Image 1 (cartoon, one colour):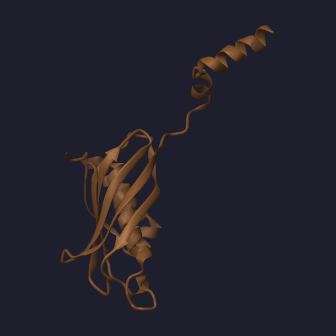
Image 2 (cartoon, helix red, strand yellow):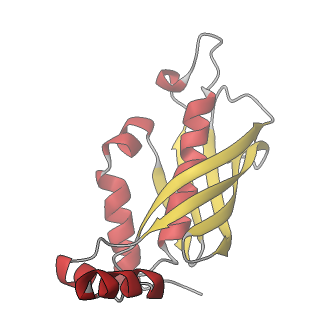
Image 3 (tube, one colour):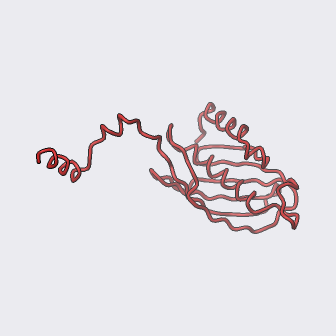
Length: 164
């Protein structure tokens, strides 16, 4: 199911303006409900002393795909953050583009789980993983916070204190 064009444009602007994504050279290729695909080109600045792309850069690409896939299925005012992820690396990267994809496999009220994968431009698997993210709700206003009903046990104690 496609997402609204205006929301897709907003997500693309978010990617284009994020300093970290600019640093890594990450660009958004495709986004749909519960799915995102990003591209990151090989650059010497992403390599470690052995001349291959650092695992942290590859993990960042995968994590970015997860976050944006999740952003397509949350409600207005909600935000997402990674709680944890596990990633397995299968092949070193010494050139070419890396494609990071993520698909949401379960989204609850507070937690979501996604599969993530990074492939070479030729389609060879570089890394795969699983991520758990938290869905953060917008902070409540003071009025909403104070008008919220108290749990029955707390309400009873408050009444006893006032009577007493």
